Length: 415
Image (tube, rainbow, N blue to C red; front, side, top):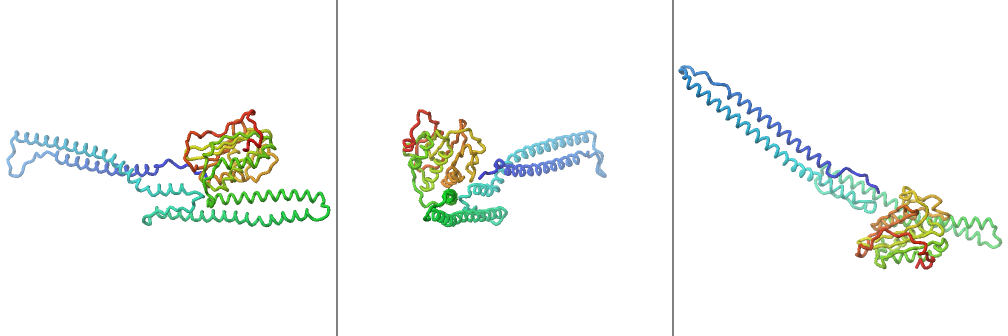
């Protein structure tokens, strides 16, 4: 599953913070302007000189009037200085509170968006293999709770759809086995009848058996895909990957010899163990070896490597051949995807080999990597979680292409 790249985390939080700080600055600036206007009005009112006299009061001497005017001017200057200090202090306080509002806004926005971040992380963890998980966000029945419940309902429907698909594939594959067996029996009976059998009938029977075998391989591939994607293994154990590889190469020694292939192998000497389903992991190794033999050149070479390091085990299978298109190689893990006839050769496959490998690897928490070798040929790498702790220095980048002087016979290479 390919995720759409989202915006950097914190964008909405930054917007909320800017909104909080902007509103605070706006309200503080308005209050500061109102205070400045009130202060200016008071200065204008106090600046009006009091030159008049009360009724019946004798006029003040000139010296007294001058003294009064001087005191009024001093009072005005004091009021102006005090107003300036108040405005300056208010501006400094506004700047300080602006910084504080940014910090408070960031904190409050984080608290508000925390349920959404939790929902996002939980949704990313949920994939096709664990659709049974739910967000189950606690809290009051607000908008966030409604969103979480909606996502949980969507996951429930997706789980039902995936389960129905897997049941259909498994049931259909099982049900089709019966008519296939009947057809194969009918062909055998027709050929085994007493008396001479026409040559055309024998030819037709041979073709029918080949087609029936092809359909049977397809059904078996569908069953393995359904089982691996279900992820419920009853035969899980600590499986030595090197032993499975040796058994697979030994069982195909005649096919290797028929194509005169050179086999070069590099192992970690018994330390590469994975916790997996033994039958599915055996199918994974067999598919990789079959793919490397079938889609290889006569007189070519085959490189296999099992490396363990840290918490992972890596199985690499390489083949020589012509330079391949990286775009087409990247799609080989999809069902029924094949390269051109120049690589597939005469043998026909079901088109499910590498897709089954990918499904089995993903079901065990691993990955499948496909790469076109610059020198020509294909490199297939399967990385699985290891069952033992090993030294990470044993990790390497797969197999090296063997020299022609390293050629061995097929039987010796498979041992």
